[in-house]
Length: 124
Image (cartoon, rainbow, N blue to C red; front, side, top):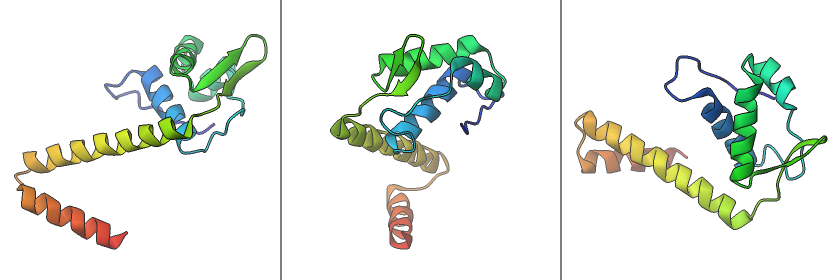
């Protein structure tokens, strides 16, 4: 599984794992019923502690994104398409809010920010 861990990030490693797996599930890269790597396999692959991976899997299970079957493994849970769409919308809003904050810190006005957004939308 292709996950990228940034050891110099202020974000804890388990949260990086959770965020990336959540994104893969929400984008449909990981499908319902698909098995995740075992805790040990993913820990070895990422060169992190198995306890860190376990903590990430526990958080994903708590959020209803995966199901762990004792002795069998961890699998992507059935996703409610409405809540998945809402999660994607929320993530986009968060990213846009961060971009607007950065633009304002750079001294851009609301009109300049709107102009940039319009240019980006035209290019899409």
